[in-house]
Image (tube, rainbow, N blue to C red):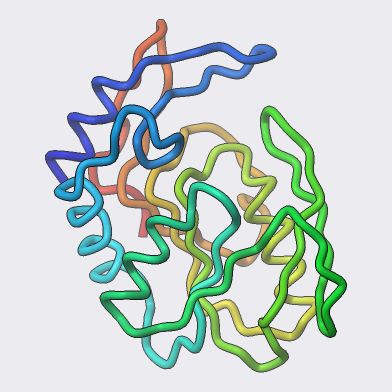
Length: 188
């Protein structure tokens, strides 16, 4: 995980409404996402995630898409993207996403009762997005086999008091305008 670790240490920090946000190729697409970094991350996700009998990978738009697409290509598990646009299709489920810096409605399509899913995202920070998605998946009747985030920003999050133990590849904090790696092996 040397590429991920170094890329985080090099990440610039911006403040948006009191929220300290690191700018990173995985979470923002800036700077350019090098194939070696993506490959390193995908291999580690495949090693860490519970993939047995998983029917679908579920990821929120937009920054989970590139990671989840690469995992899907490597595992042959179909991918479902939770969108910010309503289509009104049969079985569509709406959810309200609230993060540290925004609030949106999102929509789940093509996840059915009994589907065994891997929930995969780029960053776990406040946990607002993942909590909303897990609640929507529970409402649908899907079985969440595992929840994985590439990067976890230290601090409390909304999944702390749930039954979901989020696996992460690396944990960080933002201190004095810099990214500090708090656990280079992540959780789980």
